[in-house]
Amino acid sequence: MKIPEDIVKQQPFFQVWDEEVPTGQVVVAMDGSVLVFKGHGSGTDGSKYISIKRSVDGGKTWTEESKVGDMIKVDGDMSDDGRYPNNNWTGLGNVMVDEVTGHIMVFMTTLKTAQKLFRSKDHGKTWKMEETQIKPGKDGWTPATNGACDPGVTMKYGPKKGRLIMPARVFPEYLNKGKNKKRFNDLYAMALYSDDRGKSWSSSAPFPIGGTGESGLVELSNGKIYHNSRTHMRPGNRRIAYSHDAGETWVGEHEDDELFDGPPDVYGCKAGLLRLPYEDRDILLFSSPGNRQTRTDITVWVSFDGGQSWPVHRLIKEGPGNYTWIAAGRKGTPSEGFVYLLAGKDWMARFNLSWLLESNHPGK
Figure: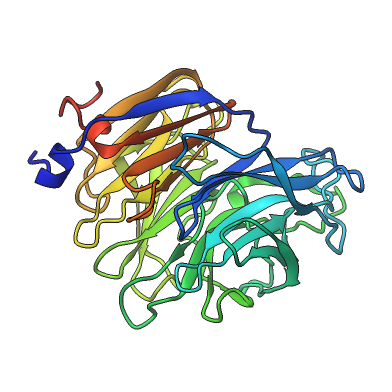
């Protein structure tokens, strides 16, 4: 495997630290500020809110946590099989950085999303709640902008350049008043997309196989959308599908032959997916537990061909890890060249691609 020359010249860098994560998301604003979002609270009025920490120096130092805003209730009975108490109160949903305007959107969701979001027009310094419209799909169900999905992306190629698209999830029968046990095979991954800078969002077709969710997606340099999903229904590897129409429909669903989907006792685990910001190279990173028996030993895999193969992987941290989210720094800012990984077991790391490839030996 030949490593690009500019990457070879990078000085390897790695750092890990403790970071309490009740529920989280991490993104990098267009000015290079690294933003960590956390969901807090037990579901009582005033105690359930979203917070943010910011770093303007690439992750060296961080602000104290401040409040983005309070959670809200959604209309309707959100009861299900009892797994989600207080479920008409929203929790932290997905995050979207609009790379055209620089705005950042933070969603709130239960088993279906709220029709409101928090928007920042100053790279995460201040926030204002506003109305949005999340349109149901053809089956009539309103998706959840699930915080266990990866952040959205701004399309850079093709006739829909500038479109906002983010992974989401549909929980059918969310208004069941607790009468029916929720069946994982009824859930499905999908995407929401916006052509009006986030004022409204349309639902894509369902991911081609049921029992999926907590997914990630990236746009490849040929304009194709690569969608990588967890599955709750079967042991095995990640499920992959593609879109050739800017995220409206999905084709080519298959099981990846390399990327493991979590321990067999729970079937799958939320993973992190990222396309690094190289214009002419589809270098993807995938983060997930590396232990095939427990959600531990978070590992990052590297693909140089848009997810067709994953020739290199490296352990990030031994021990508990669970869910992960990853984000890349912005060119020309203090965050440039860094990858930021937030783990659901209370730690965070930053490193660069040179460190991942340091030995050029898979599994180091």
